[in-house]
Each structure stands twice: as C-alpha cells, then as structure tokens.
Length: 395
Image 1: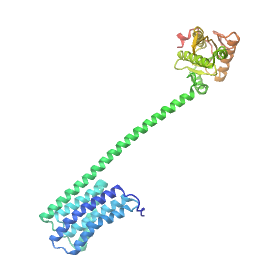
Image 2 (image 1 turned 45 degrees about the vertical axis):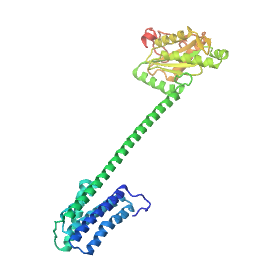
Image 3 (image 1 turned 135 degrees about the vertical axis):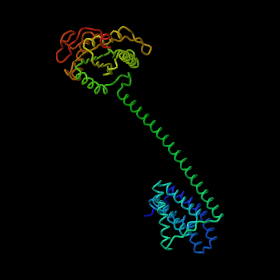
C-alpha cells in the first residue's frame, strides 16, 4: 500500500539515499575501471550503470512512497547486499572490490539491526553469490586487482566510512539535543505541576478560610469537627468546644463604623489564634461568633481556656482605625467524652451556655444550664477531672 507522494520521507530514507547515491557513484568508477582492465563488454558496463547510478534513485522512490518507509528501506538494504553478492561472484571476487562491497553492505545492515542485521546482510550477499554460481555452473575466483583499482577501492571505502561516521555523529548530536530538550520540557512540566499543586493548595486553603479574619470557616468546620469527634471517640478522649460571641458588637459598628468593627474582629481572631494548639480548630462561626474545637481537652481545662481568652480581651482596650474600643466576650463551653454526643448536639449545648452567659450579664464564661465543674454531666457531657488551669494541663 502506497502513501501519498506529499508525505515527507523518513530521515533514514533520506540519509541512505544521499549515502547510496554518493558512494555508489564512487563504486561505479572502481568497478568500471576493473571491468575495463579485464575487457568486459558493453553489457557489463550497462548493468553497472543501471545498478550503481540508476538503482539508488529507484529504491529511494520506492521507499518514500511506502506506507511503512522504514520497513521498505530495510528491504532496500537487503537488496543492496544481494546485488553486492551478485557482483562479487560475477567478477570473481576481486579482493579489494569484494572487501569494499562486503564491509559497506554489512555496516549498513548492522547500523539498523545490530548483529541480526549483519547476519541478514551476509545471508543476502551469499544468496546473490549462490545465484551466480548456479547460473555459471561453478565458482570463478580472480582475487587480483591492479594498483589503481586497489587504491581507488581504498579511497572509496575510506570516504564511505567518513560519510558513515559523519552521519552517526550528526544523529548523536541531534539525539543529545532532543534528549536535552525533553529534559528541559520535563523540568518545565514538573515546575508547572508543582505550581498547579501549590495553587490548588492555596485555593483549597482560601476556600476553607474566612477572608476577613484568616480563621477557618464553617465549611471547613463540618468535615474537620467530625474527624476530631471520631478520633476522640475511638481513643476515649474528651472533646470540648468554646462558642464565643463579642458583646454588643452591633453597637461598635453603629458607633464607629463597619471598618472599625472589621478591625476588632481581626484583632480578636489574632488573639484566639495565639492560644491555639496544633490540634485545635479555630473558626469564625458567624458574624461576630467564633468557635474553638479542642480535642483531648477536659471540661475544666476548657473552662480555664475560655476564662483566659475572656480576661485577655476584656483587660485591654483595642485601637481600631484610630478609635479606642473596649471589647468583651461571652463564652459558652461544652464537652463530651467518647461518642456521648454528636457534633451538632455538642454545639447546641455550647449555644445554650452562650445564651446563658448573655442572659446573666455578658463578659463571662458559662456551661449549659444544670452543668457545673466537678459533677458528672448529663446527656453525655464529659465528667470533669481535677481542676487545673488550661495553660498547665492542656497547652
């Protein structure tokens, strides 16, 4: 099956056509000189011209039009060796001519098929010899060549080897440059992949963060809180939460503007983050509400932690947008051990405690109604251990 003539020839087909056309023209001079010295007739001269001057272009045309150009070119190389065998046997194996043809044909096959190709080339040459012997009815052996033919054979062989080496060097350089470009492209792709992964991580983090305060948002809280619940339930450890609300935050916005309110939220969020452990989850739960998830922290330690945060906020007036703003916190605390409560139920308890803190005058830390440190908790609320400050027991 032939390919369209517009298809660009394979680089091997182009290279072999160039080498074949040049080297076989030199071989024509050598063999024609030898034929002239031995008085061969015009038939030999005509066959030499067809073989060494016309044949290279015919097989090139055949290979470039083939659908599988490389396969067609290997067939051409085998045909070359077969024709070399014909000429060696027909001329009586003149030593330098036979050596030149044998070396060139074998190198061509070995270059593309290694040892297997060399054996195939030798086999094709022997087949050509056998055909001549069968037609002739015997083997003709005339190894002597004149000095001019010997010198021309040496020169032709040397020139061919130089051409062959030059082609190999060119292919080596091209291969090296191609591999270098591939490595550079691979490095660039790796860098792009790292950039994409970093961007994905950044986007994921941004999706999980509150834009104003930089704390985690409620979207992140859903999955992470359930994960911590499962872990603490598996390990039999307590899990506590603090639900924090800024007192009279609407009055701050009304009196000083939303820019001041936003700055107050950022400063309180920064304070809460300063006290978090690596295992804690600090979220902006609502407008002026924050929620802290405290894995492996007892109820008493959580109360101490909440009181620590409340005091730090209350004892210092905050400067926001040039305004001195006093801020206080109301905190609801709830805790559970094992699988006593679901995350939603625990948050509901903390919300009840926060409502209680608001109802009792704000700026305070409260437990849900009916709970108190030192007593067993109902409905799965964790039993407190001995009273200890958060900083000493759980930081």
